[in-house]
Image (tube, rainbow, N blue to C red; front, side, top):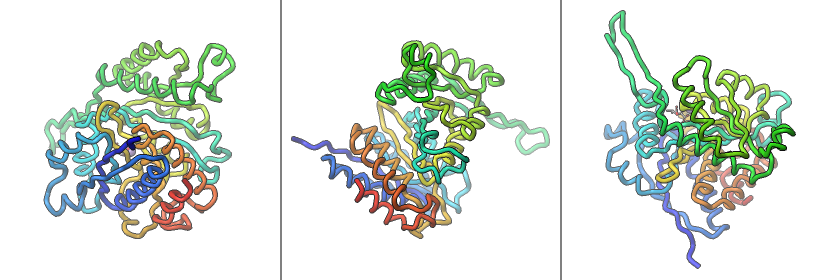
Length: 369
Ligand code: IPM
Ligand code: MN
């Protein structure tokens, strides 16, 4: 029998990015050995240091090479000596857009009650997924200045919502929601939902009361696309109410779909109720092309090189990547190992307070597989 083999592009990036990447790859390799597939890594030297040395952010030739991979693993971008925006827009957003990674998938799952800052909420209350549209909205760069630098200057930043872009995002979200719990009814459903044949819920998070063009389109497309998914209960929440309920009643959510900016904001809040940026991972997904997996936490420059940063978000991003590649057993085993280590060993999920170093946490998870 031939073993499946995956060649993955790796951008360690800035700050603690390379440290957490090392642990994610270590754990993924241990899972590969256990579940019988092969991984190889193709490193790319992209990030703040390269930019400071050579002036290059992301050469076109690198983008062309990256297109050939099914997956990219990204540690972090963001460098204290580089003006904010250059690396974020020039690397992260450029790759998301040019590789048409139109979904940003962010699972939100609390593993241990003590890690949740919300009183009386435990793992049974925090277990949902955010599907963030990743190619449009206010992130496209559409807009500009008029009379820049004068007292009457105008800055316009437009939100782009195409029917095609919104629909493909919604379709992905409905497919994911329909399959999410293997057909077992989600416990947030009401008895009448279950009688009506619903097994899961997709919440559109928007602002239909104010953004009456953008979310009008989203809402119409939501119901049109959703009509084909009879097992998915369609739900709606304004983005401000969503923030309130993340704190008050996170158990009301199963899967959420939203636009680029709202998704950016609510997933930082969501990361806090799942235990912080030390665990939150995301996938930038192009189901037909090259996807990119990353911890949500950023480059955390003040912890660079100290071996104290929590690598679990990166390890979880590695699990998301393996799941995307079809290695579902390996992905599930990594998650189970992470839960076991968090519950039995790790004192706190915060950098420097884990009770173990970055590399020790990677070793512990790899050994628990
Ligand atoms: C994220 C980040 C990025 C975003 C930044 C770094 C451009 O905050 O992945 O959520 O806004 O999408
Ligand atoms: Mn963000």
